[in-house]
Length: 455
Ligand code: BES
Ligand code: ZN
Image (cartoon, rainbow, N blue to C red; front, side, top):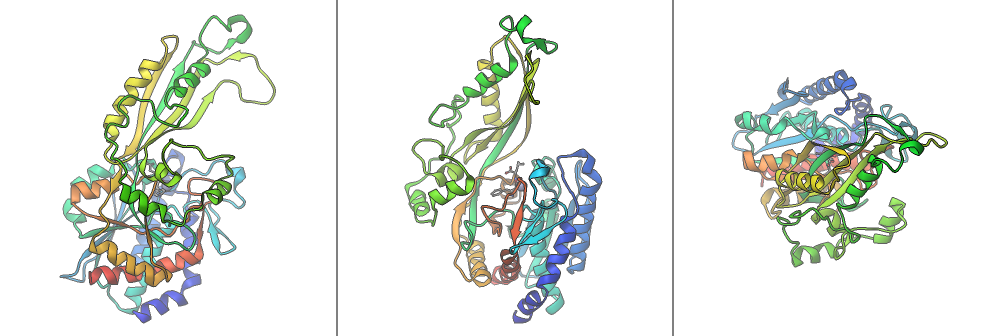
């Protein structure tokens, strides 16, 4: 083990240089013009796995982007980890807010800046390097490992449920390991035991067949921008509660015990607010900030588009208005049921003065696990060894759609051990990963395999 850790320490700078190459590939799954880059990232991932000593490495086609698979099964009788991550990234707009270009990784103050640095290439690479260190120094891993790295996570993993069902045998394992989430805070490593789910919609409202002079026609027809604003305004009350009938029916109430645990976490609300640059925090009445983000569902507007938004003034009635909206879900809400409730409600509250088109997009189920299992305890010890600190247990507000599928289809628990940070700027300009956490993460991953092997 000492040799493995020494190897990781000696190779620290090389890892960063290699990661820069990975981060240079603009594998944006949401944008069709990047399809070739997405494939290149898949191939790069496969090459890295091969170089790390994994066997049977290959790209497996799906109706969308390929899955990268690689395994090492040389430890019969020992447990098998199914490692899951993603090589695709989010779009980079608004580009002008990036200090350095998103696909030319740049290191400043001990952090590496690039799209995908934290979410998720940096964290995937961390495990590939931990494996490589074992293979170089010990010629073997202490357990069996299967890498399963997909290219459609950022667009909702739409082909993955089917893929998992069709490859049950190949993906069979004892535990899933995922590093695709932030830690609780700088210096406070964590293990995440819950994620929210998601349903996403696009709403298109049409008022007239073309834009109109607002003097000649204003007052005679409904304005779609205004109607859309009125429709959206009916989704939540002023106390932050979602008004869709039935929305809360299946929400699992937060236990007093869990609330008490969360109150003990080192969370500084004022600092949080200031870092976000918000004049005030806002959320559902009766819940703390952590409770709102981790254990309560929300309705959000992701984007709005209508009418004249250029410089100056133009007197016009827009013909159309569009909104992208989404709901984060918590156990035991089901995306399909919430989608039905939302669709029925939005159609009911939208007046007949406009045409409304409702399009459902991607989503995912919420997930939560009992964290008192031997693998989670093993992860706790590994994090202690890698970071010199005992991890806290947290839930997260984000979603990883396939996690609940691993549970339901393969019967596997997941251990979410992330090394990002709350200020990592995932999905935003200037995404970054702390290189100290990246390095400690490689060491902790190496310990994790050994701890799980003996668990
Ligand atoms: N890494 C995130 C998931 C995440 C975010 C976990 C924050 C914990 C905290 C992942 O890459 C992601 O962004 N997922 C999407 C899923 C969606 C497209 C279905 C998300 O949460 O928006
Ligand atoms: Zn993401």
